[in-house]
Image (cartoon, rainbow, N blue to C red; front, side, top):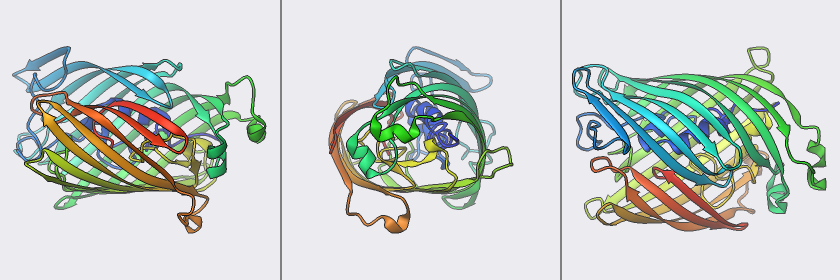
Amino acid sequence: MATAERTSGWAERLGGAALALALVLTPAGLRAQADSTTEWFAPPAAESPSRGAPATPEDVGRDSEVVNPDRGTTLAVAPIPNYNAQFGFGIALAGMAFRKLDDHPETPPSTGMLLGYASDNGTWGAALMGIGHFDGDAWRAAGGLGYFKLFYDFFGFGTDAGTEGESVEIKQPVSFLFGQGLRRVSGDLYGGVRAQYVHSEFSISSNTIPPELAQFAGLTGTVNSLGLAPVVQFDSRDNTYYPVRGWNSSLATTMSFDGFASDSTYQRTYGYVDFYHGWAEGRQVLALGVDGCYVSGDVPISNYCSIGELKGIRGYQVGRYQDRFQASLQAEYRRKIGGRFGFAVFGGVAGISPTPAQFDGGDLRAAAGAGLRFQLTKKYPLNYRVDAAFGSDGGQFYVAVAEAF
């Protein structure tokens, strides 16, 4: 048993880890929806000054960009250096295309992306992904497919396993395919459904296994998983790249059934609520975020809930603290300090437990940190960020495009 979730919350944690990896590497407007919610490629509204402006050549991509005036298509190619504790230092090469699909003044540009990635721990892969907006953004359609060969640490389950810190390296090739459709229900409220299919093979690549993980010595196998998920999202942010005010919340439950193109029956629910309040003409912003995850049934090992995944707190390696339930609370102060530069100070708490009923807050993990910001484009407030965060196990270093939540 293995994964259906490192592909939808990464495309539920990127094949869990593969799709998520693709998201961490891509700009904010392209990134949001694969966190098992709905914002995956969600650029701001095309003609709305409060939510952003149409993409232009000087705004999207630094190395290569071409505009086709007849078709209104903007093309961009950009390298994206990055770092995270799971995969180490890596670089992605992203080719992107932006285009409005109809003449409605409220329709944002749709986006397609071809992504290649490689990191210094041996992880590599490629993905093709996109989102379409139609009829004044009343309809949103997203989809993607890809292949990643992942290498990551497995610590076992529960708080004690994470505290001990003993791990083995997992090798996990992942192929994924997903599609999603959303319809505006009323105002800023959307509803729809997502389907995802994941094929995964996994094995332990470590030469030695710590005694604490001896029960997982035979961990190897192949997993096929087809998941269906109803999705609900409320999004009143004034800008999807750098919100100054508004709310963003989502809830999705992915369901897989044994015999229905899946090897096991289980459910994974992930939800979050983010709030943004800015002042001083948007130069200062306070962001608050809550997220939670719960899995039930015969769950693949890579689909458990982990501290630090998706919109979780920074300061802990993803996968070190994982169980069937996870919840976190965090806050971040963001400040622009002149030109394209800025900084952020953040902190939060998170915890895991076997069930929601057993989550009593008595063994929470806290973390805090700070980082620098650099706005990549003149028109879009899309930041490249470098963060350092410290938890009970030490420090973690993050280099990525777009805000953490």
